[in-house]
Image 1 (cartoon, one colour):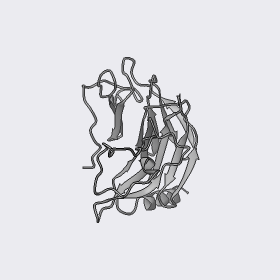
Image 2: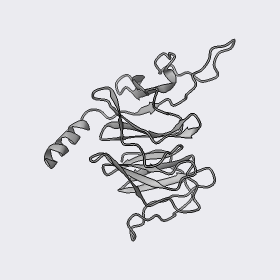
Image 3: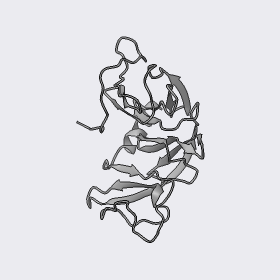
Image 4: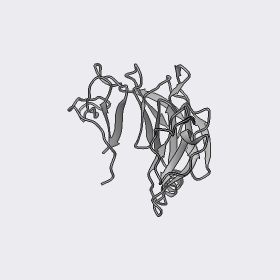
Length: 217
């Protein structure tokens, strides 16, 4: 059974790796007496009324952005966290109206279908969503220091070590590298927070910094 699962996951990762972006604006540009001030790239596909909620990918051959899918209306894109795991796209949390959301959605690019998975343990907005070692990590959010981990094999979220006191996990950035989670930024100050090698699940502050981009090397 384990070998069959590993084979399925390996096949999901076959193909060409591409860069994807999601438009998360909830309010489309309105026409008026003057042209929109939003810059328009000649490499982008034509916009329509739903263009603010598209997921686009950069075609490796044409180097043009193509539409992969659109975020469903029930997905609160504003303030949500997004990442990929085993070639699935996950969208978690966000803001719906004036409230934070706990809903989590999953997109399968092989079938083109969206589905909903287990909700977060608590509503979050302005969170970071990161994948590492077969799990998702929902990190912080507005007024939250908590971190929770999702196991897709059992469809379950569990709380793990929280962010250190004194950090401010709003508008922060996060990524994974070498089996560690790194969190930087925030509205008040910047701090790099990998787990400590001496105490599993704990964090240690390193230096002021910003995560700019995740690179494969």
